[in-house]
Image (cartoon, rainbow, N blue to C red; front, side, top):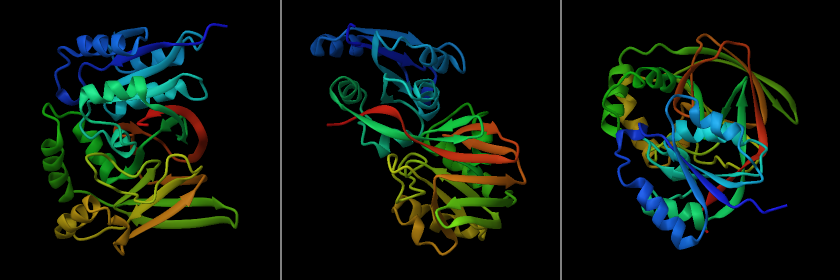
Length: 297
């Protein structure tokens, strides 16, 4: 059998609002330098990256390089679960959470080099009913923001920051009931929350670190519950998040698990930053080392 060697670059032309002009030439330049065959496909619609990854020829392709944000990475990742083809990332999104956690260069040329020359590592995935998450997903405030963010014409950090401030004045807490499975049995948690994050990596993006102890290859997810707080504490919470001290806040509770069942008073969720609607009851479970990812040497 011929060893798979082709690199497929799947480029989301709309990701992050950044120009993709000249990107194909950069890829061709680096592919020639590393002497590897490559192909480039620009996505044309939502779900296109998943369609490509889900039917990938494992005997031909060695790596799919997701060029875009966490949404594009999620689509490619979903299609590569339990496949031999590895995922590489050229981050071009608004937050680039998984890329930042994985120490993948944000500079385009360096990220392309990493795709060709990095090392392969296995990574967990999280299944949330029929959705799959590789970075951070959740319900509550961040999910409400994600649903509003999809309608914004101007993206990026400052657009997101302004939206967060607007939402902070109007958001109503979400009621949750969790059956958390562990070796000691099932623990039931009932509460009203500002948000609940299901974290595989440690951050939303832009180094906003929600789960400092999260690890993408430990066979567990972190369930981070943020209890309701006064709106004027928002700058403090944000500062603690960017200082990697979010778990030091008394209103923040962190659990680790490989399996839980949840009921929530809303269907408004996000999966890796992309808005989705998930109806209760909800089962969340870890898929240990379900995908291969290219990270720096």
